[in-house]
Length: 107
Image (tube, rainbow, N blue to C red; front, side, top):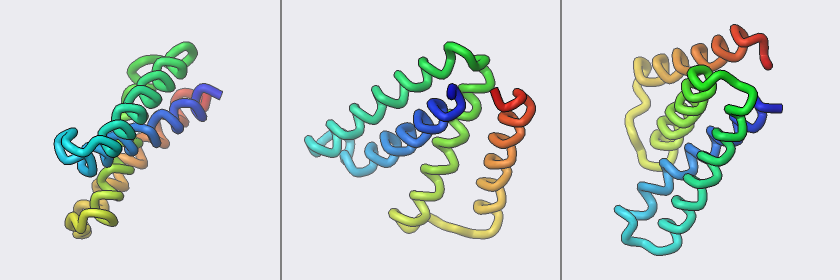
């Protein structure tokens, strides 16, 4: 269950990171509110997952999900470069996340 909570926390991390772009430096009210809400939810869920997962593993996975999701959405939403090396290194992060999950026994 903690891994599922951690994955959802990572999704909310992506939401607040992308929200930072849409909030335009917190100058737009509703995108700023959504960004702050996503940040609070992400942190609360990360904290919940830490009740049973090691902090190093959980934090690395949380930031990895955030990095992969934000980089991918940056390509899709903001026309950021999608060259082969960038996509390959995003894939390396995914391999790291999966490796951490597998090496923890999936618990």
